[in-house]
Length: 485
Image (tube, rainbow, N blue to C red; front, side, top):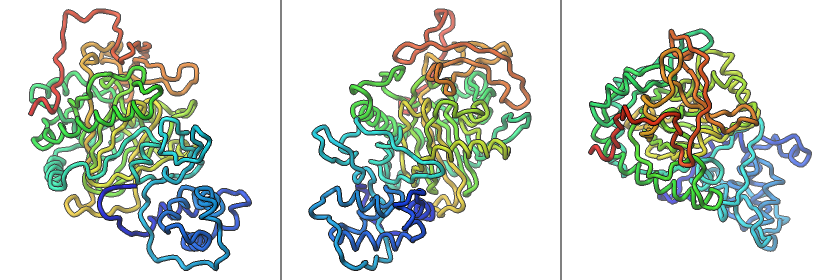
């Protein structure tokens, strides 16, 4: 259950209504496929008068609108007390409770054979099976943690502190820009504005002349603002807490993943993005690993307008247009190309997707398995609910930890003159999970790439095993945001 003040009453959103109203083509659901949520609720309330309406709604959502499936689940929780009654249909209330936690209603077998809720044993949970053409909407932190490689913390900052940071970054967003990249022999622009932030003025030169993003240098680099730096300490502390919880509760044997760094996560760079209006977006992508290394963790703070953060698993042969989709890394996606959009939509539709709702002042932690095994997106919306300060804009800060051992001076050089980028193989089963250095200049506007390729090797802690010792040129390291205060 969420613990963020009094529970508000509301109707289902159009997306939830569609999800609840959707049914499979099996005979046990066809009888109710055309009925509204009100009617389905009324049926279940009449059958189970001892169960609260809010709980019935949660179960109905978890069963994707199937009255029969919801009825079976409600009865199985306490067969004696919740046996269906023969009363007439009750008239449902005109308002519904906000979704709290699906995982508290989804049952699984415990070690002793009894039925327990799935959130009583996260480490032994089964992956959530999304279905073709469907989007499962998650709101409760328990569900996000149970079904995705993410953790969400609502009301992360004190309200006044969050609003101060929002005002500061809205002012900063006037200096944000759209960047260009190459796709299908066309030069296209990013579908939202952004800027890179570092801790000190000395790091500006490095970011504009040594670090590349998607095969090109960024000119729009700014120094971290006072409030951005202040908040980073709280982000760092909370992200490290969540990393340890994830290792303890979810990962096999309570140990970190292979290649995941055992060190404290300390942000030393940030991408700040501005999405103005419902149409600005970023398509499905995995974040570029070049400076983050294998199994990175990213802390993402959302301010202003609420938007949907959608995720889907990467499966073998999923990325038939993988190079095009990876152009979405660090924000390059949702291109004007209808052909690419249609392919990406078809892949998402084929396996289903999960939508995590990101309200104002929420911190989303993308854990170590996220970039290699999942893709994520901010999808266009039909409309947004205006924020009293931000209007129709969403500000997003993605705090990142660039590893010292992956400074651009250490990375293999392409034959075309720029350093290679790091990617994880995802398409073929035989190489899935391996890392590779490859040229990416062909995706930079006005540049032609080369065919450079080299498998990447790392130790168990994710530090590279370079072919040569780096003793001649010790590269400067980026300053931790917190340490620069």
